[in-house]
Structure formats: C-alpha cells, structure tokens
Image 1 (spheres, one colour):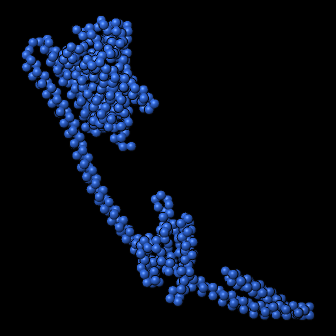
Image 2 (tube, helix red, strand yellow; image 1 turned 90 degrees about the vertical axis):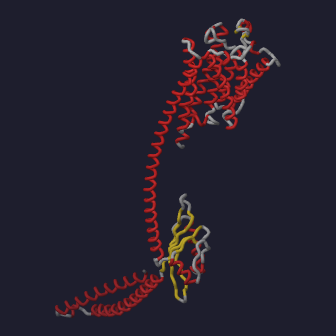
Length: 518
C-alpha cells in the first residue's frame, strides 16, 4: 500500500471516529434538553435566560438525525433500513412544519410534546414552536441522510453539498447570537432558532462531512498532500478569526462610543493584518517545500545522471559479454540450437546453420519448423522420443548415425530443458557433437584388441604346447636311475621352469580373454 493510501486510510478512520463522537454529543445535548422540559430545568432548555429554549420536537428530531448517522456509520447493511426510515421521518417533520408556516396544512406537530409547558413559553408575541430555518434544516438533513452516503460516490458528493448548506445557515444563526442580532438567527414574526439548535445543526452537518470525507470536495481537505494540510490549517482560521475580530469590534462599540466608520475600518484592518500573516506563514511553508523539492530534484538529477552512466557502462559490458558469448557459441564445432514446444527453431549457431546448409542446401529460419532431414529421417523417432523426455523435465542424450556423401556420420545430441521465470519448461536446448572420430578410434582400438587377442592366443598356445612336451618328458625320466646328483638337480630346475612358464601362459590367456570381453 502506498503512503498516500495509508494516510488516507488512517485519516478516514480518524474522521469516522470523530463523526461518531460528534453524533453522541448531539444526542447528549438533545437528551439534556428533553430532560430540562421534563423536569423544568431552565438551564438545560436554554443556554441563557435571555435566549430561546429548544423546542422538544426539535430535540427529538436531533436524536433521530444523530442515531440515523450512527446506524449508517456502523457499516452493517441490516441497520441501513431503520436509518433510512429515521431519515424519512426527519424530512417529513421538516416538510410538515414548512407547510404549517406557509399556512398550507398545519398539524401542530411541534406542540405535541409537553403542550401545557409550551403554552407558557412565549418569546415576544411568538409561542415556542419550531423555527422556520430549523424546519428547513431538518428537511435538508432528512434528504441527505436518505441518500446512500457511503455506497455511491455521486450521492455522497451531493450529500456533502447539502450538509454544507445546513452548516452555513446554522453558522449564520450562531454568529447572530454572538453579535446579538436577531436578524441573523430569527425570521420576522416567528420564534428565532435556539442557540443550541444552531450548535446541533452545525455539529451534525460537520459529522456528515467528516464521515463522508472520501468523496467530493472533502477529498481535497483530507488529502495527505500539502494542499490538504494548508486547507486544514486555513479553514478554521478563515472562520474563527473574522468572527472573533467582529465580536471584538462589536464589544468595543458597546463599551466605548465611536463611529460606525471607525469600527468598520478597525475591523477591516484587523482582518487584513491577520490574513497577511496567514499568507506570509503559508508562503514560508511553501518556500521550504520548494527548497526541499529543488534540492531533491537536483539530487535526483545527479542520481539519474550517475544511473544513466552506470546503465550505459553495464549495457556496454553486457553487449561485450554477449558478443563474446556469441563468438564462443558461433565458433565452436558443436551444433548448438534450441526449439520451442511446437518444435519450431528458436536459436541456431553458425555450426548448425553450416551443417544444415551442407546437408540440405538450406539455411535455418528462426521460428520455422525443425528440418528433420538434417538429422536423417531414420533418426526422427529417436529424436522425437528425446524431445518428449526433455519436455518432461529430463536431460536426455541421443546418438544418431547417418550417411553423408557416402561416408558414415555419428552424432551425439544432449537435450536439456529450459525453464521460464515461472518454472515451466518452454524450450529445449540441444548440443550436437560430432562423434565420428571417436567411433573410428573405438573401432581401431577394437580391431587392435582383436589382433592382440589373436596374437596372444596363437603365441600362448604354441609356447604352451612346447612347455607341455617338456613337462611330459621330464616326468618320464626316473630320477632314481640317475646317480648323478648334478643331473637330477638340472632336471628339477627344468621341471620348475616349465611349470612357472605354464602359469605365465595361463595368465596371458586370461588377460587376453578379458580384453576381448571389454
């Protein structure tokens, strides 16, 4: 997984967890409001005694909104249906209230909960009812929560825009409370939006944007690139700083008298100064990035130059080695060639080419079928068996004999399987060596052995016949009749020499027989 993908995965997981936390906060605020209505706790119904209390139906609808988002964030498809039902209910509540405001159809749904207590809640001339901008917000929330947020990219992008609209008008209302401007958070003749209602709208819309951060314009803000980092830094500043400076300007206007023109000029000057330093900070960061990128590009350029030089040297060395290899292969007397599984020629050295041309008058063509005439048609079955053995993974040696221009030719071919990168045999390497001289030498050796055997046999038998005669004559002589001791000693020497000569002759016959057997 790439660094960008890893960062995106971690960021998305963190934002999902944050969206869940925000949803629980919204539920907590809404439950606190309902608790305040149930037990008449004014500090829970309204943030300040001078502010508007949140309508109980508004609090209940926020619970539906946050719960629907949590169900969709669970990732369990079985929970999507109840989430969609809640989203539809939220949209219906918003529509019914908008119809009541326009006097088209009024069910009074925002007075169903705690009606007796609501009758005593009056803000000016308006009773505590759901504000028009609150009804519009719930209609938008119901619409976007009914979309397949996390399933389809297009609908997720549309949901982001709807959530941004909710976020915008809720922020507008919250800013109105900060500046104490009713026009910002209320609509004439109607009860204004409660402050914590604006806060809940802001939180729930922010949770939807965070949960849907991998789609639409939110991808730009959550990316691991520096543009995303700058956006995550600048967006909070662009929202909070103008609000803060405007509040300072407003508060100083309340305490000290000065003209509106002076206050506006002071506000604009403050915004310009703050944004000037923000731009300066961003420029410094981008300059550092540019400097680092320039250094990296220079190092990469030097590295590429060195790499190109090394590649060029290695390429030249490979070319030289290849030339030496081809020179070695092409200048050997052995026939070196290879075929694929279809017995089409893959490679052939010069010796093979010359041999084929000498026998058939044709030069080999790479990719063409094997020319069997070059090995002798009588040897084809032997070679086919050798190819089958080699393609089964065995190294095989085959001998062939053929007549070339009236002279016998003996060849010895070694078949070796060649494996590809995946370990499969895709071709066979063949090396054919001329064994004619070896066969002639073996034949001469055999003839010499036969002659030696014949000579040894003839000579040994002739000599042995004479030795046998001597041994026979010596045995007829009676040593007792000869009184001369010296003569007896001579006879004994003759018998012993004849016997030893007979042993030597037998050994010669045995050796001659062994040579013949070999």
